[in-house]
Image 1 (cartoon, rainbow, N blue to C red):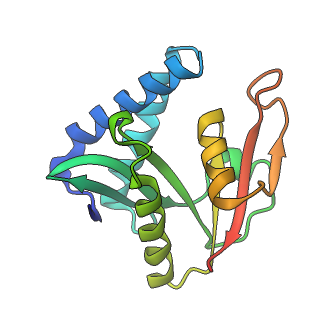
Image 2: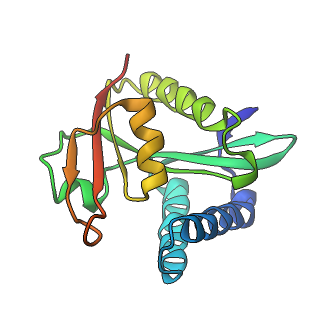
Length: 169
């Protein structure tokens, strides 16, 4: 596995990765398919910002020259900033997507270890992470433990949004 910053030539492949991942999530979690276009647009905006803004860092993981996963560091999103008191200059770990055919093969664990190294290289000691999809929430509970904040019924009855604030170890 190879972890690296994104290149402008990655835009189409990343767009395809986001669409494939979100289609899979929408089907698995029985969500409204209109969510796909909005989320892909948001992710592509973060990708574009990473070229122009030194506070947005987008990375990919490749296997045999194929992008199989993405992860980013950026300022915390609205779901975080509007619901908790955030600490200045603490990044959010965001944009974590892995192609469905590469899930449960250690790609997520690899990317998370790499992003923690990147945080340390940048002198950061803490980070935020949030999750709205239940499968993502289960994964992050396994990795990070119980969330720092649970926004109950945030996405509708029984559909919570979870936020973690963690210190690097």
